[in-house]
Each structure stands twice: as C-alpha cells, then as structure tokens.
Figure (tube, rainbow, N blue to C red):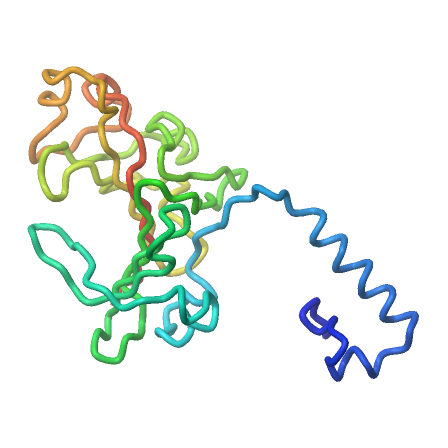
Length: 225
C-alpha cells in the first residue's frame, strides 16, 4: 500500500512506479492535505504513540527527540512521579505522560492535557463532538447525553467527573478510560463556590453545580493496569 510518505524523489516505491501512477498518487495526497483545515485541533486518543504497550521510544518516534523530555509530573497531594512531557515549552501542545512501568518507561498509565492546551477528545457517540480544555459543563453534559456525577471542589480530587452514568463519555472506543476535571468559573461568587465544594458528589445538572459555571480544566486518557 502506498503512503503519502512514500512520495519522495529517493523513495524506492516512488521511483519504481509508472508516471501515471505517480500523478494519481500526488493528486490523492493533495486531496488529503487540502481537506484538513489549517487550524484543525489535534485529537487525543489511546492509539499510536499512546497505545497500551507504547513506550518512550514510541513518543520520540512520533514527536521527535527534542520534544520529549523526562520530568517529574505532579500527581496531587504535593507528590510527583517520574514521567514524560511532550512539547514542554508549548502550552498548546503539551502532554504529560505517566507510566505503569516507570523503570522501563513503557505502558502509559495516563496521558493528560491541561490549561492552554488545544488537544481535543472526540466523543464516540452520537456525533463526534469535541471536548477541549475550556469546554463548559453544560456542553460536556450534552455530549454525554445525560447528567453525570462530579466531586465537589476545593480538595485534591475536587472537580473530577467520577461517574458518567452510562453516557456516551463512558465509551472511548478502546479499553482506556476518559477522565475530565472541571474548575469553577473564576468570577463566580465565593458563597456559590463553597456550596459546590467538599467531599460530596454533585449531579452535573444540579443548580449548585451549575451556579459556579464549571469549565474543563484537564483531560486525561487512562489505561488500567
């Protein structure tokens, strides 16, 4: 099978092809390029360099050695864990990776994007609508197709969606799991934030939760052990 990457003057496949085949191949690849918007947002998914059995070498192959660095990743409660950061100096493209096998740097445990990121997650059902950092709570609920449960704010696990209640976001198309964290809209009143805080779980549709106008603050795809 010919790939667009084979269209190069020194490619063996390219030089062996008849001229007419070369011409058709160029047209096909141009159609692919022109069909993708210039400002298309990259999609976060549990495949390719983030598949279950991937390793540090797979990240380097996909993103380049200069764009993958080893670093300590914040995992909450003032604790860090060795992992990898992709595009560490570019907030729009930055991804944090934690490993199941820390010593060998393989088998991703989670891949996470945070504030400033332009990576998106595409829902499997019903219409591939996208979620990105900054997406409002009501929109996430609409994509899920039903209300879900969120931890109250103000602690290390605050703001995490903890149960999709069988909605569309419970399914990622693979064995990995989607985890989304929300933050209250910064300008909401202190009393409203206090009402939505603490070690309780709130339905996403509850007036208490809607009053603080939560937005997505991080998106993670996680592989269970």
